[in-house]
Length: 233
Image (cartoon, rainbow, N blue to C red; front, top):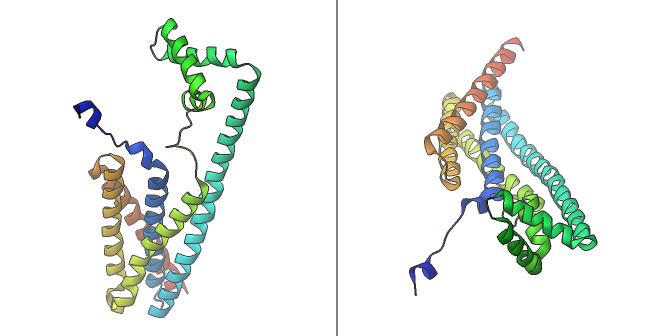
């Protein structure tokens, strides 16, 4: 087999849909649940009260993430379907004009006029709607919205992220609860930042710093609010 025939490529863009939902869900699960636990613990609540608040935060957060992702991605999906339906109608009404439009797209990308017309004609003969969706609308199988997948992924990963600080509540002594939850959350955020950057082909250090900074800030603010209200009450 030739070297060219054996060559294969894995493009990271294929991961965009599920990767975004997974990383966002796990990060939010860690940050929101850990912040909630730290804030409630700072208000001098009992360990059982902290645990109940954390479990409630996990359930509410997972459902909220699932609903939010489903609604958001469904809106994107509806827009894509409407654009594809409009494109299909235009292709049926005037295929020659659509072929010229496709050829024009290829010309703007550096293909000469004669060759762009030939390419457009061949692409139209093979899959006219697919060619216009991909080259005219920017819609492909890699980037197409998948609402159910996004909702399920977000809910699952949120729950997994929230489970780590909740586990620390169970195993930690009362006097060590806050530092152990905070440390676990920061370690988890660093791992998520590295994982997300690695899977997406981005700089790992930048990904870690970004999520750890905002996670630490969220926990610090909620701890301050919890301590303030605990003192007042």
